[in-house]
Length: 148
Image 1 (spheres, rainbow, N blue to C red):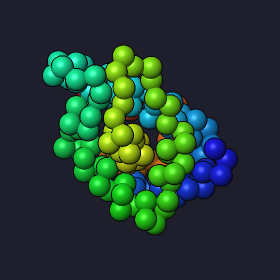
Image 2: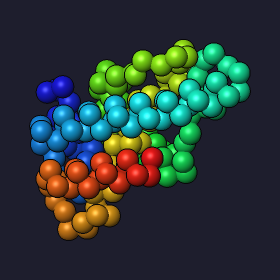
Image 3: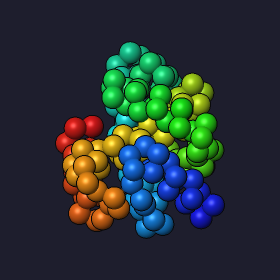
Image 4: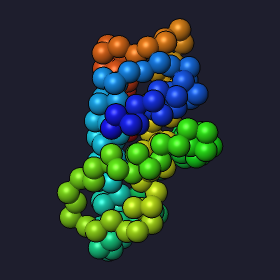
């Protein structure tokens, strides 16, 4: 994880003008995995409703905002390559159904899109924010719990 700290610092700077540190990386890791877990649980539900035993990309509930953040991540990833790091950090939750190869392939972009949206939500909450503190993380995490 240490090797990725500089890349994530640069990604947050490019995405939203934020400065983060090593403690923020741990919170980011926890945040991404919690969000992925929720997203995949909903995808599993949809796959089951459609009588499938494998979760496909069509099952993953992507909002327009998340899709736009994933697109922004792909663009920023060319400048600040973190997709490989995100792929290694992503912990898949235990699910009843198998995860399709198409979903496996999109996990780094999903995690990256969540990272970009997170950084931008910090700035919506406090446009003058430069370095997120615990209270900022708590507000953002609560917002995501309510909305996602």
